Each structure stands twice: as structure tokens, then as C-alpha cells.
Image 1 (spheres, one colour):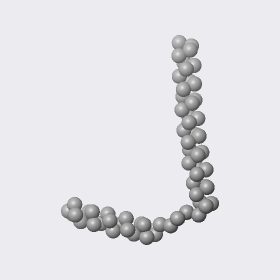
Image 2 (cartoon, helix red, strand yellow):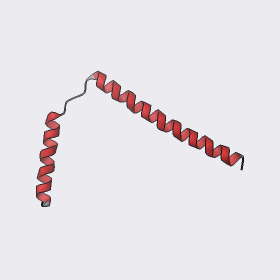
Image 3 (spheres, rainbow, N blue to C red):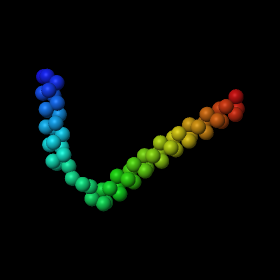
Image 4 (cartoon, helix red, strand yellow):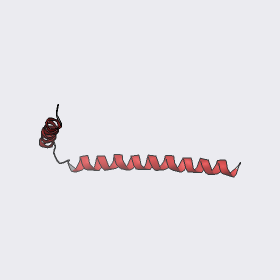
Length: 61
């Protein structure tokens, strides 16, 4: 398959996806924001714990 044909195929697929897409409802938006916020908190918490552990190791070595 040539590069041109791959590009045409990609554009066709993108067009199909955009036709099926819709704007989320307010409830869906809020739920997505909550999930993203929870993920941010979890990653931050893990980073904080790693930092505390490293500092404790440095303190006692």
C-alpha cells in the first residue's frame, strides 16, 4: 500500500469517527473530570510517598 493510499485510508477513518462522535453531556463531563482528578491525586500521592521514603533512607544512612 502506498503512502498516498494510507493517507486516504486514514482520512476516511477519521471522517467516520468524527461523524459518530458527539458532545458529552454535562454528567459525562463531570464524571470524566472526577476520574482525571482521582488519577492526578493517585500519581501525586505515589510521588509523595517515594519522596518521603527516599528522604528517610538518606536520613538513616
